Structures are given as structure tokens and as C-alpha cells.
Length: 244
Image (tube, rainbow, N blue to C red; front, top):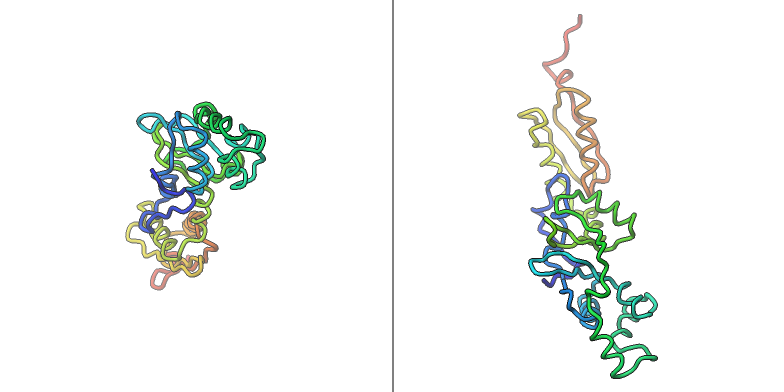
């Protein structure tokens, strides 16, 4: 497992699910460590992979904890300043030098310092719920699990990327919604997308349908605005209601 959590990108064809789930945007092959990994090894991984958290797994990718920068720095008594703190951690603070610090950094393991009350999400969980939990718990990277086993990780960066999606991806997502069986079979609903603005055209059976469809489309990541230009069957040419 070797992907950097903040630089992973999924192919556009895989981003058209509704709703967008953790599985759609996660890094499926994250950096992990075993419970026996030393503090020094973990610090080295974080610096060289440019990551802020590593999941701790046992045999079979069973998630047992996570180690964050805070777990490392606070345990060692360092201020929580990225890179400067971790680099010093590798060299040892001025008060602890040479053999003493080497022994200490090799003695401490992931199992001893990891956070075991892991806040995670399921592969099927909607991204909107994940984003809400990240904000509420001040989490930057969250493990994604399937049946208790680590399946990947989701970062804030992954979530934010959804809101700057290319128009082609947004349209693919909206087209999937419009082709869903709930809407009238054979419906001619169409969508055009430009700079995140979705223009809906076509025919619907009643005005309420347009309101529902627009509400759903507005929730698609990357949609800035929805312009409703649909018409109802009752007022289309050749199908006007007869006066009573």
C-alpha cells in the first residue's frame, strides 16, 4: 500500500454514482503500518509520503487504530508544528541525544501510541455525511472500512475535489439521475452543463416533478445552479387542456 492520501484521483467514469459514496472518492491503497512499527519508522513514513495519519492494521487488513502527527508529537513532548516537529523527532530533541534517543524511538511502537477509538466510515456511506463528520470532529483523513477491514482512506482534499469537477463529469452524473426509472419511461429530459450551471429541458407530466428533479440535481457535487426550462405535458403543443 503506497498511495499518498492527498494526491489520489479516480477516473471520471467512476464518479457518476448517486449519491457519491466513500468508495467513489477514497484512496484504495493507503500507506499503513503494523502494530509493531516503531515511532521512528512511522515518523519517517509521514515525512516522506507527506501524509498526516497512518492506519494501523493487523493480519487481513483488520483496522485496530490510527497514528496521527499529534500522537507522535504529543507523546514525544514536541510542539505540533508539521515537518519541523517531525524532522526534529527523527533527530532527537536537544535534551535527548545519541544512544538514549535512538533507544527510545526504536522502543516505542504504533501499538503503544495509536488511537484505538477510531472514527471511520463505511464504503457505502454518502460523502455528504462524511464531510459533516470531518468538520464536527476536526478530522483531516478518515479510514474507510468494509466489514471491519480497511478498504481505503478519505481526506478533506478528496471531498473538496468533488466541487471542482469538470462539466463532463457533472453532466454524466446528472444524466444518470435523469435516466432513472422513477421518472416517466421514455422521458425526453435533457441536461446541458456549463461552468457548473445545469440547464434542464424536456417534457414532464406535472410541475411537481420538475421541483423534485431540480432539488436532486442541486445536490450533485460540482453543480453551482440549476435552471429549469422543462415544460409539462398539459401545455405542450397539441395537448392543451380543453376549456370546460
